[in-house]
Image (cartoon, rainbow over the protein chains, first blue to last red):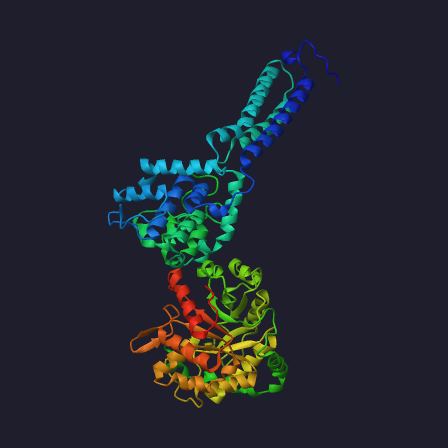
Amino acid sequence: MTVIAAPGDTWGISGPTFLWVYLLAALVVVVGSIVHRRRVLAGPPAADVGQLGPQQVAFLNGGNQLAIWTSLGGLRGTGIVGVRPDRRLTVGGQLRVGATPLDRAVHHAASRNLYASELGRDGWVLRALEQLRDGLQRQGLALTQAQRLSARRGSFLLLSLVLLGVARIVAGLANDHPVGFLILLLIPLAVAAALIARVPWRTRAADVALRELRRRNLHLAPASDPAFSTYGAAGAALGVALFGTASLWAMDPGFAEQAEIQRQALSPGGTSSGGTSCSGGGSSCSGGSSCGGGCGGGGGCGG
Amino acid sequence: MTGPGTATTDPGVWAAGPGTATTDPGVWAAGAGRDAAGAGEAAGGGPGPTGVGIGWRPEIAGFVAELPGLRFVEVVAEAVAPHGPPPAGLAELVERGVTVVPHGVRLSLGGAEPVDPARVAHLARVAELVGAPLVSEHIAFVRAGGLEAGHLLPLPRSREAVAAVVANVRRAQAELPVPLALEPIAALFDWPDDELDEADFLTEILDATGATLLLDIANVHANSRNRGTDPLALLDRLPLDRVAYVHVAGGAEQGGYYHDTHTDPVPPVVLDLVGALCARHRPPALLLERDGHWPPAPELRAELDAIAAASGYPVVT
């Protein structure tokens, strides 16, 4: 096999030479991207999961909306927030000591009789959620925009390589040169670029923390049919945070239905599952179509 | 309860009982002998139940897990899958060295037909799974003539019934890896053809089988309250030295009767009976049996503390 450039070579580089150099460059970029990405997404070596409050857990598990439901579950558990016959929220007492900024925001929104579904658009609530997210980013559990962009950097390099390859294919085809191997090489590269572009919004340290918290609190999973009257408001909040609004439905089906809170069960695996929500809630689970809807669980929500 | 009318009028329920029970006692001698040897002292995994315990239920597993002084729980045997690991919360308690006693509710030891070997095997399997020192079941029947009653029904206190229970207990003991404790149940009525009183009925069964007694103190109250008898007189006549542990459950007065609901608080009168029992012969362990309508954690802790105070055992909360 000759590698000497001939007058007919595309861009003056022979096909085999280009292929080898291209392959080497692709390998370097892919390996480099993966290493870089792993480092960015790692988070701190060991997070103390005991330090996380239910709303922080909820934000890591399901983003803004789950944090809101968790706050609402805790406030409902202490009887501070209720719902009126017209489905608007209402308040039934003063906030307790130890209320989080999100609790204050949700309580304030309830005092203005918002619908539960409007909480995520309320300015005060959104500011509280930003505060929650900032704290988690400082702890290395949630990723900042800069970190997510950085983790994605490799995919831009790979995309450049793919574009270069496409240009070479077009030029090669125009010169009637064979391009089959290059096309074969481009396919896995494009796939790798797409995979590396998918960046979660929490670190692996947060994944580990959530797994540990779910393991420790299996008794709050809907399948255990937890006695929230015994576990109290804190248990209810953590139940919602770890296992979704199915916990809120189990705790107070009347409130959940009246406030039109979408039923959602996050299985211990971290994905949404209708089965879990329908097995745990007993009589409250007759809702049929409302079972199992909602957010995609683990990585998909909020962001 | 609709049992009395239907069951008494059907002699078929008992027809098979005496026959099978008396055919050949020798067949069961090995089982009874082994159990008698192990009676009183735990033959199984860990030590026997001691102190104040609580019925482990999945609904309150998180509450039970956080009781610092807990040494003893009971689990409904039928709620544990025979293969594969026990429920996560229960497995953690076993690891902590907490004694777990499987409590059967479906064996139907009081049934006229022989006890179902598959159900005994399940109870045995659960006992091995949790390293239990003993298992317990009710002196009651839950099915007859192929019909499932769905709950525990009382036996007439006749010699026929004693024979039927003894036969079934021996069959179960032969297959169980650990001793068996028997629990009499609450009843709103007496059968018309009772030949024995409660104490004699129980003592005959225990004597014949070597089984220990699981005494439900709330049932003692319920039975005496509903029949107008003296609970202390019954305590005086029961073989209290054979009690393996005691159930303490809540109940409620309704329509002139005391109902052993397991979903209400333990009334003071039952706690007083606990005190009276312990003054006579303190049992090795007492267990709070709650099955639903769960109260806030502080109330549940207060009930455990009240049982500890009434019995003089250390608080577990």
